[in-house]
Structures are given as C-alpha cells and as structure tokens.
Length: 389
Image 1 (cartoon, rainbow, N blue to C red):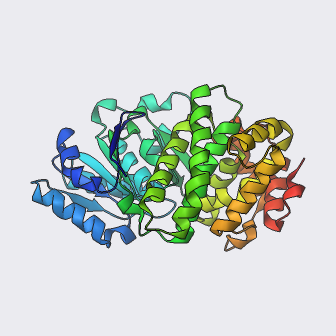
Image 2 (image 1 turned 90 degrees about the vertical axis):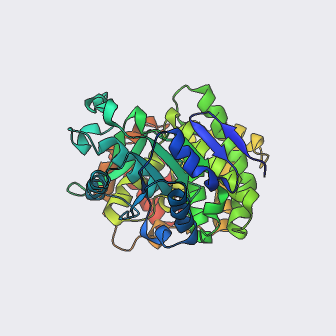
C-alpha cells in the first residue's frame, strides 16, 4: 500500500514500515528523551524492541513505562508521571492500544501540572484548569484498530474509589504526530481484532445516529462504516493482510474523528461495565450494539434505512440490524452480555451510572434508568426484541 501524509485532524503518516520514521518524528518535535508508554505484553515483542534500538541508534535517550492495564486507573497515570519526571523526559511516544495511548497522553498532560488529574474531567471548561505551557508533545502509534485514541483529545481513566471511568480532556492531548503502521497490528489475535474493529464500528455508528448537527462528522462516519464492511472480516480472517489492517486503522481513526458529533447508550453502558467488571471496552460495545439499536429504533429507523442503502446491504432498517448481527457472528462476537462478564451483573447500579455518563447525553433517545435496565436485561438474555421500549 502506498504511503500517505495527512494533516487532518493532526499529522498522520500512513503505511506499513513507517516506524522507521519515529526518530525523525521525535527530533521534529524537539524530543530528545521520549518516554515510551506501552503495555507489558507489547514490551516483550520484537517490534517494540526494534523501536527502542532505533531510537538509541539515532542518539535519543528513551525510557519505558509499561505498567498499563486494559482499564487504566489514576494510580497508573500517577506512576507514569513519576517515571516521566525521574527520567527527565521531554515527550511521550505512546505505542499500543487505547489503554496505552490514553495513559501516555494523560502522562504528557499531567507530569508537570499543579492541578489534580480529576480536575480535568470533561465537564464544562474544566480543562482550563491545566497549565497548557507545561504539556509535553505526544507521538501516537496504535497497535490496534478500534479506539482511535491516537486522534483524540481525551482519555478514559478509571477512578478506583468510585469505580467510574472518567473522561479526562484537554485540547493539547491530541498527539502532534500519528503513525498508522499496520506492521504493529499484524500480531493482534483474531478475537482482539474483532473486538477492536467492532469498537471502531460502534464509534462510527453512534456518531452517525447522534442527534447533534454535524454534517462533516456524519460524512466521515458513513465512509468509515463502508471501510468496516469491506475490511473487518478480512482482517480477522487473515491477520497478515496489511491492506485490511491498514484500512481498519483508518476506519478506527475516522470513528474517533466522527464522534465529536456524540456517542450514545452503547458507550454510556460500556464505560461503567468496564469499570465494574474490568471487561474489554470494544467487546462490550460489540455485544451491546444490537440491543441499543433496537432500543433506539423508533427514532433511527429512517437513518438506518438510508445507511443500509449506502452500504449496499439492503433498503430497510431491518436489513441494517441483520447485517450487524451477521457481522458479529462472522467475526466471533458473543451474542449475550452474560458470556463476557465473569461475575454477576448489578443491573440497577450499572443503569444508574449509565444515566450519568456523558455519552448518554447524545443518545438518539433520552434514556432513563429503567431504559438502561431494559437494555441490560435484554443483552444478558440475548433477546434483541426485548430491548424495545
């Protein structure tokens, strides 16, 4: 696949093998001592070791922070900030899935701040509490194709005391440079390829269905879903398919760009479920998807019918819902929420948290606690129709 350089929404270098340009990217941003933020599993892989060796070869002095879990907590960010300061680092190179990128971006924002992490929760203009002059430059290299965190201005961090996933926001959290190098995604197992790919679809789909007026985001969402239609199953079936891998990276990035239009009940439920059960975020969205669509059906029937025609999968809302179910089945997503949770689900507690989640504000219908409870019970039983009001 040919290489491309894009400047929307930030500098994006697309194409396999572009990791060779990481040293140059650091130097372009005056980063001499990058802190490489990744996770423990990735740190052991040859690609990460090659990156570190190349940085050293080019005269840079990288450090590594890999204490990152699937649902990262404030204590992990604090430990990362301590590592950043102890190593005298001057920038962050975040390599990994959404968790590593979220932690890396948050470290870059918080390492030199006087305000607290939770002071920057995405409420109103709270981001202005941060001193923008001390925020460090960020380079992001995604190793999955789902969250799109590489082009996001926010991060999801768990506040352990309240068991909440908190959205931390600052405009300068957006990485300065993104490398979409599909070589980093080749080793991703099929089940994670499927879960992260469906996460990208959830971003695109909820942005498309959001009632917020934003035609540019809506257009990006539509095109992103066409890419998912064409390439997700291919990437799951053959992890070495660089064309499919690259296209899914692009779809993931498009999803995160589009969801400035808003998200919805999938994410409003997935956030507390992830915080309470430490389950994979993308997998939760994938499982919840048809139940939330059914619950919203009364107001999204026409938009989904139009989408079905644009994706050339049918002419009616029912055709789109059938495609979602078929795609989930093809890539191996469990049908019921009970199949992915390791402990009993506290339906009322999750529903109460979902109502308060910021994503709930842009759901096509204003869900009350009882509506979220109905969706959760439908998802646990596997009966899509019972999610309807």
